Image (cartoon, rainbow, N blue to C red; front, side, top):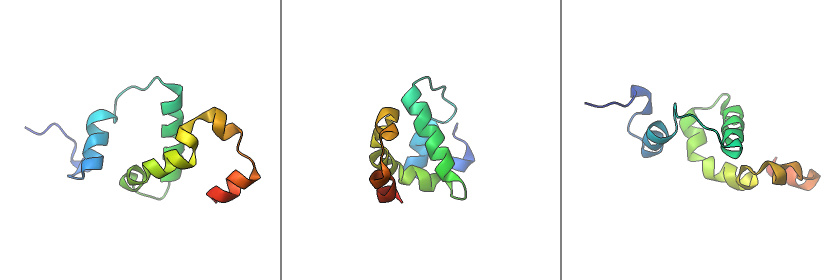
Amino acid sequence: MNDRCEWCGTDPIYIKYHDEEWGVPEYDGRALWEKLVLDGFQAGLSWITILKKRDAFRDAFHGFDPHKVAEFNEDNIQHLL
């Protein structure tokens, strides 16, 4: 019997997300912030698109370290744009 939701399909990235993250309570502030940012970027895109680009988002946002992102200057912002 398969306990996975149909929406995760067969893509390994989706399966890993479904099995290890989806519906699992998160208490780490950095990880919560990462999810919030990714949810914001997901608007208009499929969630699988965001998951496939997750490593690039982590690089762009310095591992989702809020202290580092708070220090972004105009050059950092322009680079991201």
